[in-house]
Image (tube, rainbow, N blue to C red; front, side):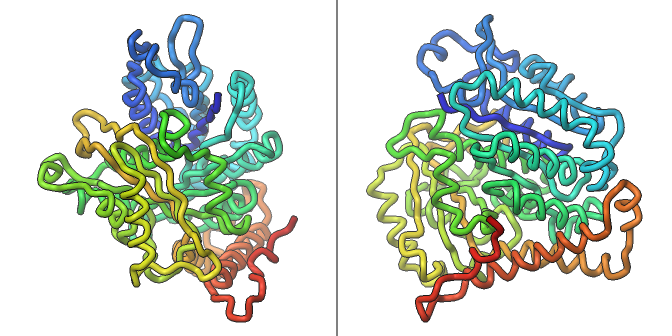
Length: 451
């Protein structure tokens, strides 16, 4: 079978993880204690992607939760799903990374990385056909950025051929949770460029806006945001778990969405995001869903796709959808003047169809719908996210503000410059990729890669 191991790092990663496992359990009919009703078990053999069956007929998630401080993991240990997880998969340390990349990567993180890799190795040994890893973390904090980078680096050594998909929560333009966010983000992105195969950018502010606008939640909480993210991850992996007319393997994302190794930062969007009150008054045609995922306001990172060009899009439809309708909708999208593709990508679209309709959490804000669409797109507009972070980084680094905290933890100052130069090169790569090939010459974006 095709198994996936999920790794949740730091507070951001763990809280997204809680929402994901809550949704996966509901999709597969698994109770919070890991038990499954007999009729469900006979009907479905799809559990094994995310769950491992024990000798007692209990299902245990294939995941590891890691944090450098105990508080967040203690909430999982005492939460409603405490009986679901294997105690050895919840790993924590005593002291925090304190929003410091260097603590997460060098001093504190170093002590925990071997234990974490050992747990991952045990999980990998239980798999018969490991597809790859899903890594969840934020890049603004200390554990998510520092320890996340360290773990990705080690995974790329131990499991070089396996696909590593990274869900990273990027700092928002206006909402900031730490002063040193720009430093951590630039250092962490430097590692993501080298060690992640595909990175999906998520941004709290963009998802806040979606919750406020589409779900009418006046003051969205993190659990509201995380449940939206969980729906995207569920759609990504639906074809591994449920039967469909056209399945999408997680390796196929890489093949179809990444034109050059460095240009692997994706934008996600979901449709329909709608509250239960409004759902009865709407008709969700396939054309509406397809237009919905291209709406700039539905993007889960703060950037405007109208300012850039699309290189590739992967549309994952689930539920009661006819392929003919989807093909017609895609043909209409291609004719729209507002959606630009680079001239060297003639097809541009990959579609997946899955018969399993989306599941929603009972008592949640999302309405139960019978069809949905999730889009993962590679667009040059994502460079706006990096440009914003680079600008903030430059303002602080010009004065060498807060740098002593990083150097004091055993990091060299040269690492800041190296990471910043790498991100400047990335911005340039995106500019070059967006240029039209008038003379038919080859693009130089691939030339910046070191093979």
